[in-house]
Amino acid sequence: MSVLLFFIDGLGIGSRGTFNPFDGLQDAAPLAVFKNEAPVTLNGILAPTDACLGMEGRPQSASGQTTILTGVNAPALLGYHKQGFPNKALLEIIREHSLFLKLKHAGVAPITFANAYTKRFFEDRPRWVSATTAAVEAAGLPFRTGDDLRNGRAVYQDFTNGMLIERGEDVPLRTANEAAEVLAAIATESRFTLYEYFITDKIGHTQDMEAARSVLQNLALLIRQLLARVDLARTSVILTSDHGNIEDLSSRNHTLNEVPTIV
Image (tube, rainbow, N blue to C red; front, top):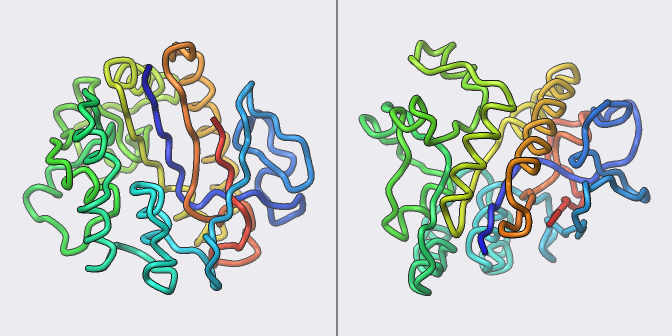
C-alpha cells in the first residue's frame, strides 16, 4: 500500500455567491465543495477540517503547513498563526517531527517529494524556505531537479511549466493529462509521495476571478486524470489544504472557512 498526499495551498470550503469562483464552474470536481451541500468527491470521503486549529485569528501558511507535515498543532505551540515561511520555532518542530523523517525511521521506503526545484534554488538558496522544503531536508532526502522535470521524473508546482517557460527555462509545456501521468508514475514507484500546489493561494490574494476559474478548472482536471491513472486499490490519495483563500475573492485575506480533506 502507498499514499499520495496532494497539498493545495489556500483552498477552503466556501458559500455559493459571486465571489466564489467555484460557483457555476463546470468540471470542477472534486475541488468544488460548498457549505451545506453534498460534495462531489468522486467516491472519496470528505472530512471538513478546521484550519484555525483551535486558535483565534486567520490561519496562515507556515504554521498550517507545519501542522500538516508533522502532525503537531503548530499554532497552538506558537500561540499564534505564522504567515509565509517557517521561523526558527517552526523549523525546530519540522526537524524533529517531519513526516518524511518519521517514515524513514519506520523503514518505509521509497518516500519522495514529487516537486522539481530549479537550478536557481541550488545556486542561490533563498534565506527562507518553505515548510515542505524543510520537511524533506529533515529526512535527508534528495530534491528533484530541472533534469528530472525535463525527463518526466518530476512535476513543477505549476504543473504546466508555463511559469518556468516564461522565465526562459528549457522545459516542456505540459497539459494536465501529461502532468497527471508523470505524478501517477512517481506515486506508483513510491510508498509515500507528496506533491505541493500553491498557485491557488497566490491567485486568491490577487482576487482575479478569471484567473481563479481557469486555474481551478485545470487543477481539477489534473486531479481527475491522476485518480484515473493511479491504482486506488493500492494507493490512497489524500487532498488537503492549510487554509481557505481562493474560495472567497471578496477579500485578499485568508478565510476562516474549513478546508476540504478528501481521501
